[in-house]
Length: 167
Image (tube, rainbow, N blue to C red; front, top):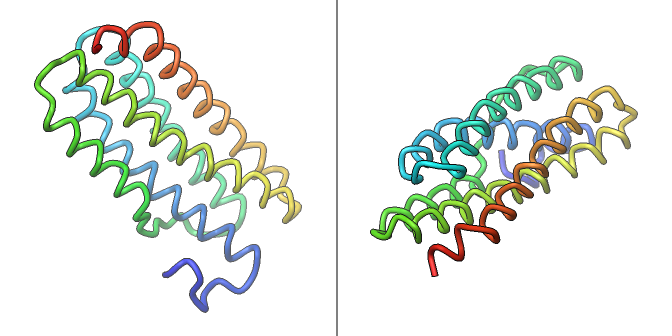
């Protein structure tokens, strides 16, 4: 379904489509994180990726809960944005031989993913509230808070350590 297809006729349709988009994205992230874990050096970045993998599995479950609460079957639609972000991360990390530079690149790639998720969850929360679905908004807010916390950890790690070691 294209973003502005005839299948999207209402705010509710748009909300469900965007849920399907982020559901696809979270599932792709669950598959991509183990590769990032394998490439990251031992230490805080690798441990952070491991922790976020477990959180991301929870994000998938929460989205399934929101679909159910909204009376809609959990279904993913292709998200070209996350596909592109993950492909770019794989391309860049495949070209880097220096492990310290690789860690800086992996952290930056992970932040690109986080920023996409933050934008989607923020939008979904606003739309859920507009649709009178505070119950859905509350569940989505839990995930948004975790995504923002992960982004902050990545920023702190990059600024305090990874970028300095790579330069």
